[in-house]
Amino acid sequence: MSRIDATFARLRAENRKAFVAYIMAGDPDRETSARVLAGLPGAGVDIVELGIPFTDPMADGPTIEAAGHRALAAGGSVTQTLDMVREFRKTDNETPIVLMGYYNPIYARAGGVEQFLTEAVEVGVDGMIVVDLPPEEDAELCLPAQAAGLNFIRLATPTTDDRRLPAVVANTSGFVYYVAVTGVTGGASADAATVGPDVARIRKAAGLPVVVGFGISSPDAAEAIAGVADGAVVGSAIVKQIGAGKPVAEVLDFVRSLADGAHRG
Image (cartoon, rainbow, N blue to C red; front, side):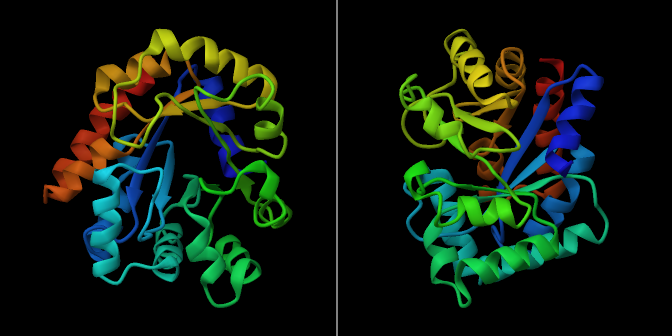
């Protein structure tokens, strides 16, 4: 059983929903980012999504795009992201970490996919979300990642109809990430009444937990979405706090308020 599977099993036993928090690795610098990362579990985060900085994040809005640029300017890279996971694992061997990003930095890195997967497993990564690799390209990364012991988590969207859904969930493991709104991160607000039927449809097709992200920026919104899903994801709202230069303690207080909301769902 992976850390992700174990986390959802524990939450089901506790009758609670998952809270998933996204931060960009190395934003605004490695030291600050590492402090935020280390504090997330204590702030109520069940699963961490750690962004790999990239110059052209096509699925992300201006908030996360800016975070990636800040991280890159401060020396962020795939290697630094893996190093942060390694440091995190020295004090936390239970909280799942999912790397979220784009294929180019992985493909272009020295050693390519094989070397990346070897290092990811070695440092303690649990899963991956790579938003620009569709199911038709599973041989590129998805299947090798799963063979290496990593969960490969797919995105489903409001436009994923019943004809497309089987392909989306076929090689997905860990959980399915449902994108609640069309467009990029940090955009329109998610609506629980609209999201609920799609979550149920995807959960039935995948046989996996479904967590919902995009358009969630407050404790009340996290509670409402978690009430119709297996968990809620917040990224841009947290990254915005970091980008505004808030002290780490204040960022973690904000994360805690979001986690409390999701856990009430």
